[in-house]
Length: 455
Image (cartoon, rainbow, N blue to C red; front, side, top):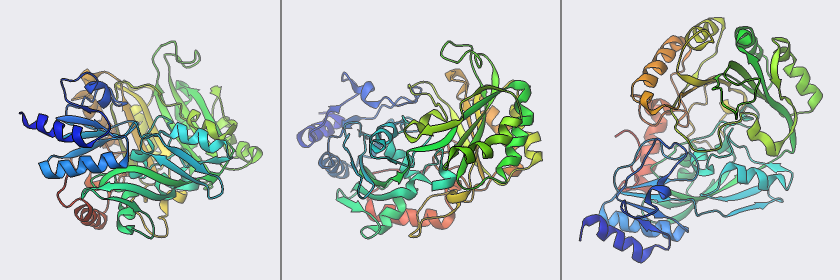
């Protein structure tokens, strides 16, 4: 019997969920992620239905010396997997809200849109990411910077506990008072510790805030962007904002005023009353004539409409870094690299204002990297796979070269493009944090059944 078939047989005898090999119907569908250009072909894929399933997979993998990688619900793994076992968590869909404690118990198959909707029924909201299609677990393991980050910090700061199947096959609860070293690591350390099957997240009391997005045509991009950069220097922590240059195709799903144009969108979220929010946003409205202005009082359950990220899977290429404090020289370099006069195959280049609560660690400490970042820079390439290997990396390299004087020495792992760029993984954590993470991985995954990192 072939080795992978023997492994499959062991899994079938011990696991309730589906077990699929490459020749089986449904294999590709089970492994499909948000980035359709990333195709996984491991020896076997296991669809988890419980923490007990996960523990059984870990025990078998340890005995066989086979690596495990986790494909959580949402945007998926950043690079193709070609060996070992992949476990999928999409069937773990449990979600409960305790309005008295404001704790959401979220299983690993949930996306943020589901949590947002459930919390809103109680006048509560999670500190979520910009996109509702992102899976909760993978996002939180990397820290997570959302549309209200300056007010509430990294999303992982609101985690109160993890249910984890460790590399030793134990089902443990990691929190502030038990397995606190693992709890520290999972809040920002990303991968290599085990299979997170559920998370407890504290919610905030929030039903409305002042926010949305406004769009400016190409001739307005430079004055509005320069105004935006200056404006961010005086914003209170109650306000979070980003500015993105979008090169939009002439397609029917694009609103007519934006269709086929290069535009600047300013995104805004202010936790406070509408008159104060409107006054705070007034300098941006005065900086140019808007094509579309959708900034106003909005329901917290509609937070994903601020960024209006794609909701359907597709071809995707991206890269991101953190930036230090910016000035007018940065505006010159940035516009010279990606402004409306440039012909670059980038459909979105976003600068997000950080600082405020993102700069402060939680009292008990966490492994989140990038707390010193003042801004982030994120690039999304034209969805043409012919450009992914050479053209887009070269273009991104040129852009990063232009803004290098303002680029932070640190990064945060959810922004980094996997391990594609030499040194990108190391930049996500200070050396001391990386060393501590390695110790925690060794303690909870002694046989390194969950490979993680560039090595």
